[in-house]
Image 1: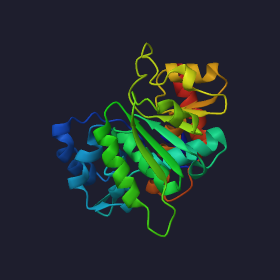
Image 2 (image 1 turned 90 degrees about the horizontal axis):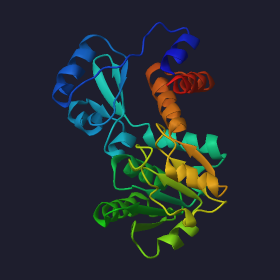
Image 3 (image 1 turned 180 degrees about the vertical axis):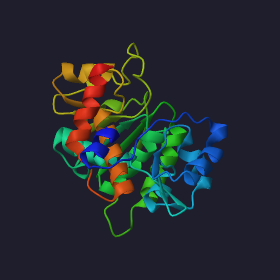
Length: 267
């Protein structure tokens, strides 16, 4: 998708993939800077490990505690995070809805992606956020962080920390507009859904961040007539936001999406 964007904008740069091991990160960053790279996208496990290597951390990325996009500018290295903002655009595209107007339930909220998405939901003004995880300690800490995040002059969201075995889980799901699945469950096509199909309703919107396979959660949601989408749109908009950071111009999102879908179809 980045190569399609570069070509459409008449830019001569090339987007490539580098396999950098954890112990190589510091040396790799120094070499990228020395060789006049414009920017870099980072994935796990580098999103937090790179923080001490940055000259500047964008305030939004600092809040998220992780970066996925780097920009080199005259020897200075700045870290950004486009995870949450990419989701906002994805929800608008897939469900024609503003994330801030929805009551959300986040499955796998204890992980890195779940944390970023939960914080973004709070920043967008979601009035109810339900954090669901196998164990409670991580989401209880995240719930406390979200409550402290909202300025006192703004209405505070209702934030609940819930385990997957909570007897009231069905009630929380029933009071939800958007279900966001952020755990790794579903990477394997044989993985079960984290939610019982009986909890899903036709009026739910269900978004699974996994796009490498059609997860059981998505199949179950489609089976009851719910609207569904997967993480491919989030990937698209994360990439488009990174392009805009690097080149200070609007990304050709439609062309990037076409290239991304063409690539996925050929896999």
